[in-house]
Image (cartoon, rainbow, N blue to C red; front, side):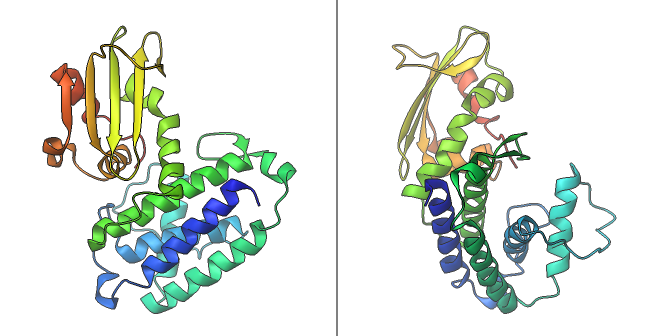
Length: 264
């Protein structure tokens, strides 16, 4: 079995274990995601996998007062609204049925199928790349549930490392485009905790990963779980500034911290 497929299966199993720990009265509690409850997070995951199985959500009217960034966001919300017919217990069962269905579909996928080009959230790319993003998305939503429920965990291991790889691929964009560091500057990002990484980024015409820097313009050290939450726009940087160690140019460091979010 291909690594990305087995990793996705592992993440679904981790989610399945987590959702069975959620109490009945916690499902409708607001999450950190705008307009979404804990129920809605799991409904979103289910809806995406059902859509990939060829199904469509019910044609329901979406909330008139809600703005959507694109058609994908509308589709996501339509799936959530269509699954509101279920109780939380039924949603858990439906999730189990959904991942079983998806495992059957992917268990014997061939290399040629994984290499086939198609749509992904980042443009045309092999289906393998699409599945990498699915691992990341499911893991990030697992962490959304954990923060909402105050059930921290699963911050290390194969899936945590795999998901951090996704952020690493975006570092040039984050530092060069999001944070807009000027040419000639450099930054060292050191992650501690569950996932330990040291990234050195040099900004010239483009921001790119480089070999270790002797004297970076600024250096930041923070827990990997906090970094992931910031990179995914889940937490306010102002709430974790005391947990980020900064060395060097303080102004540029704060510019980075305030602009780490590359996905929402």
